[in-house]
Length: 187
Image (cartoon, rainbow, N blue to C red):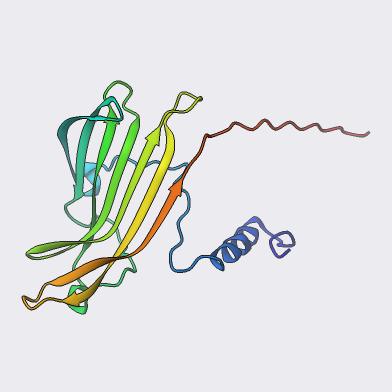
């Protein structure tokens, strides 16, 4: 009702977003169904490397490994980290499995890590698997997000991390919907 009576598109979207968040607990994920992982650019501070070839679901794939070597844009996550790591950069890294024939994305793995020497700790992990569709493109089959939090300090001073939450999206067949409209102008 609030969205329908909003006096602008921005206020309508804010109302829809606010209502959506009421039913989510701690994490808010959206846009991953239609937004595949983009290949990072070295100009954004990423190091890219072809790691080789593999077989994935019966297809030859090229594996590309990437990691952000330095922060190039402002922004930090709001994930909990131990106090001594508050100023340590949280950097993304991951792997992409590209179809060797079509270069379509077949799998994507993404992590947000904190590099607290000498260890690297994974704060968030995402795995996205794509499969064929009747539309001639690869579409999501499964997307899994995991969040990890420090839960203990070991005697050697290192933190022990454990999975705190997991969200899994599983997709069925994608369908195309037809939409038609008519407009009649009266004089």
